[in-house]
Length: 301
Image 1 (spheres, rainbow, N blue to C red):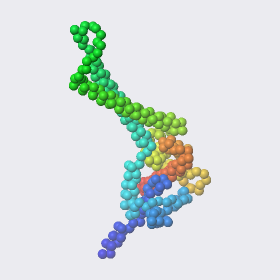
Image 2 (image 1 turned 90 degrees about the vertical axis):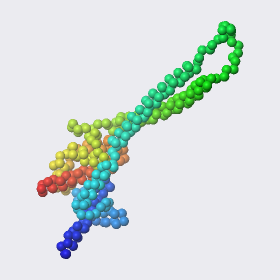
Image 3 (image 1 turned 180 degrees about the horizontal axis):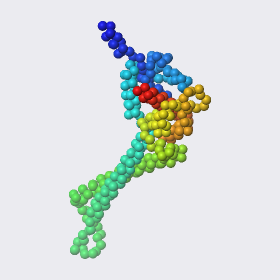
Image 4 (image 1 turned 180 degrees about the vertical axis):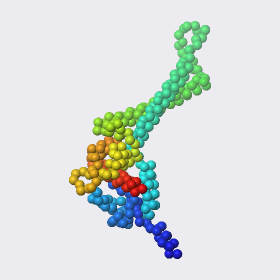
């Protein structure tokens, strides 16, 4: 009986949290014992990171055993990747809109030309040559008798009026589509030709701006996998200036290359660059810590 109750108590021990850190838009699993300043109303805690000598606030997303929290964390990260959209996606969406409007302009133009051909044919069919009475010869006709229009003439006249109306509507639609297309192309050209945001950024043989990612944090991680080896990241940390850390400082020249790639890819304005660089550094720190954990697990096995 006592053994069963001890097993049950072990199963329901919820000694871990899944936390969301808004500062770098990431999730992590941490022991409750490492968390301080629990705010029950806001469901937040603070965690001290010795390397950065600072507390970071995390929002509690889930609590449970370490195993369950790890599973929940993976699900949240996966959902975040699916829901997030990068600027690259927005750019592709804009390009798709341009293609769609271009097709509309071409289709409208084709339809306009067809309607105009129809109109010309109807108009020429209306101009029938006048028959001269053989009794009157070639003398000038002084007055025309009132002629009752044939039903066919009336139908043609109605059709011409309708065609004129349709052609005018098409002309307005074509102009509107063409103006929209000009605005979109102009907007795209400004983005592409802006000297502050070049279209390419190379590191060796790798073009960094073409690397895809659902969000900035994932983009930084992907670039770190390209610019650094796992061994480098496991032994290093982001250190700027004097430090007592036992870890090696992460090569800042390559980190600045990642920073520049983020500024260009996400069109970061000048007044936001410091804020975004902090996000890059925070994500780089987390990437180094995660890589170090993986190395420890591999060595333990």
